[in-house]
Image (cartoon, rainbow, N blue to C red; front, side, top):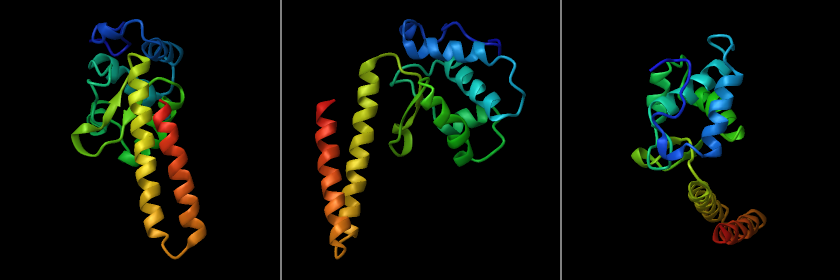
Length: 160
């Protein structure tokens, strides 16, 4: 497959997805970015996901595979900050942050997939607040704040 782009050959079930459309537009608008820049690696990551069929929540790519696949020269943390976070903010990709094989990066196909991601994020935040609440035993103001936030996040999660 050509490195110049993709017209969704490997993501046919998602052809009408606004995320796929944004991905293709992003590639088209950034064809002339300088090799080796963070923008270059953002484009290469989107191409990698499209070209390898990582569209839809059940077709997630491992971060390490993307890093290898696009020959990203820095570490995983830099990749997350320079490549993944901007692509999420542009509305092109989503990630599940489960540990191990259950996590991964993908281009969403529909709203239901985003709802699943949102629930997973809220569940993780709720869990971290519960941990903080326990750790803050003896520091009542932080314990109370963590409990209040945890309740709010729980209620938000249940509205999705």
